[in-house]
Length: 111
Length: 114
Image 1 (cartoon, rainbow over the protein chains, first blue to last red):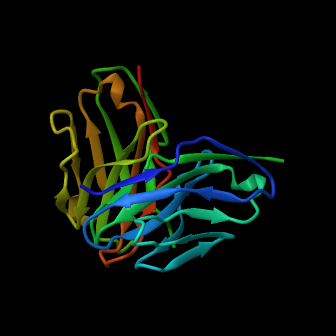
Image 2 (cartoon, rainbow over the protein chains, first blue to last red):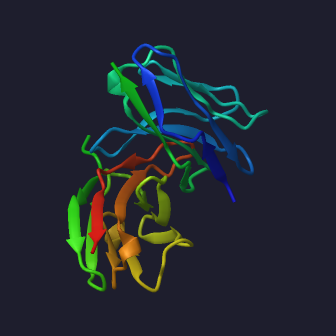
């Protein structure tokens, strides 16, 4: 079945550092890809999405590009802030079916 | 627009007791999901409804878990009897049935079974 694999966490960075969180997927067909974020004590929120190959999703300074050839959707941000500390989940969805999530990556940003 | 509402936020029960969670999705969203999120893991789908019909319940432990969605709107998830390994956050989400749309999540119910 479909699956998502994220880089192991936790990840700890200093403020203003460059961030990459790797995500690769296995799926039949052409799924939509998502990054969700979970801030402490809050529910899952959509961060960005891409619905077809070579699409780039972006939001709040974060970006991810749908790479069909490498089945990847890596999350990047050029300069992280303390407020970016959260757990990040990569996910895929085939048509109107369920979201399949990766295991999550906990990110901590130190001032 | 109001988000997905869940209650209660927290619940502590003893093993072998029963518990129920409630979810009210975003108005107009035909698709409703219940996910289980165990600490340190990604959410795992328990059941997906399309209106009031079940689309996917392949990972629902049917000997102890049940869910219903009356009139295609609100939904309840029940566990009876609970086991220690059911301790988790139970997330409800809803989405439009259109392709390529995201799901919107409630804040979840944190269940602790002691």
